[in-house]
Image (cartoon, rainbow, N blue to C red; front, top):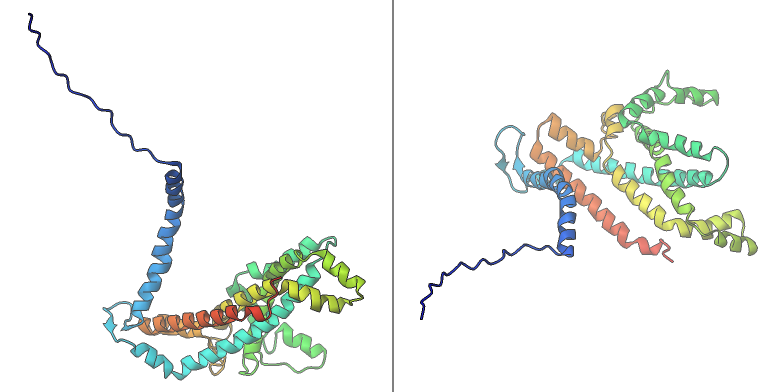
Length: 310
């Protein structure tokens, strides 16, 4: 019997390959697309917001080490007459702006809801004020409101009205700023409302005509109900933007005369960048955020009372 030596060879097992399912591949691809935006959001939005919230409980000038003060900044705000006046001014500006801007935007949207020749160019002209820099616009309007050389007083003089101190009168300054803001935002809001107008079924107008409804009846009973969701959306945008008004007030009045046009945003800017009260300014920012948030929730819950969702 012949003895044979059996040589044992190592068993080579195939390596496991990491297999990615189609769902995992799509999830990784989505994460890859979202990651840059997420990093930007954390670095430039959420991170600074949380930092400012923490700074609001300190006394800090932006240079030295912050000193923890608890809720002292918020107590001080509740007792600061200038801050309270800025809230009243901002609320008054918001009320005037939203009412006047919504009325003008609906009117312009109705005028632009046409297929006439050149209507596209007309829409472009109405949008021009919105895309123009607010600082530049404010400087131009400052000259328009000039007491002696302004175009506004010149036009009033043609009809026998004496010149008015538009930016020098506590009673007129806020109204003058509102008119500027309405002029700038009307075209933008009108185009949003125009998209809502063009989505109204024409059959509704035809049925109303058959029933003998006048043009005013069709506007009240057809246009406004069908346009109410868009009107609500635009009104919310107008409210939130007007509560943050700053540029035109800073350029044209610096908050005067007699603090009649100082807004919450301007008060924040003065405290943070002129007086270097970073902690106090951060507290102002969060109070402003809370006011806008509460008003948004209230309006959102009240939308069912007048928004037609049929």
